[in-house]
Image (cartoon, each protein chain N blue to C red):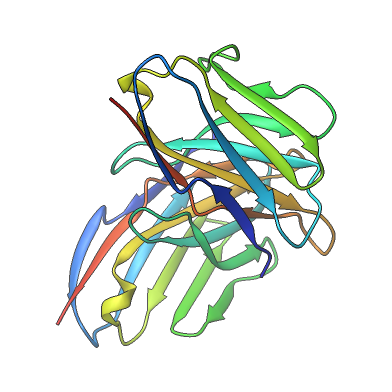
Length: 117
Length: 112
């Protein structure tokens, strides 16, 4: 199957700092990627849709100035958590859409564990 | 509102036994239904994808069923192994916009 990678796999940072998470589609091009956040024992919650070459679309309640998304190429989207606080600690997962075939399949990355001290 | 409900929330099964997980959804318009396996601390991995016209699909020891009329799906795990311990997430794709509606997952623990 298609491969989506994330980097870093885990990060610990101090409160007030910014953290960048990368999401790459390794063997296909993705004009659309998604960023999710998952709290323990909870389902994945969609944060935003990342569109190559245009602005991201954020879900209601997600601060666009706090969670900066850049989708500069067809294989890379980045999520920057600005001025991180302990409540931002979570598991962040990206996914990429591979088009073609009978349906558009969405492949998930392995996730990034963010811990803000 | 697009919703996906899964049951049971969690279950413990003996190694070698079978189990069935349930998923009910109210997503519309429907595109396809997927089952994912998510190990702790990892991203979801696709097990099966079924469109409206498909009512069963297998992937090794995993067999998924879909009844589009009653909007129900099940995932059957045969001859469970310790490595099957994970959360199994039912996900329904909304037609036309690539958005996914997620269930909260069935937490399966396989014990020796």
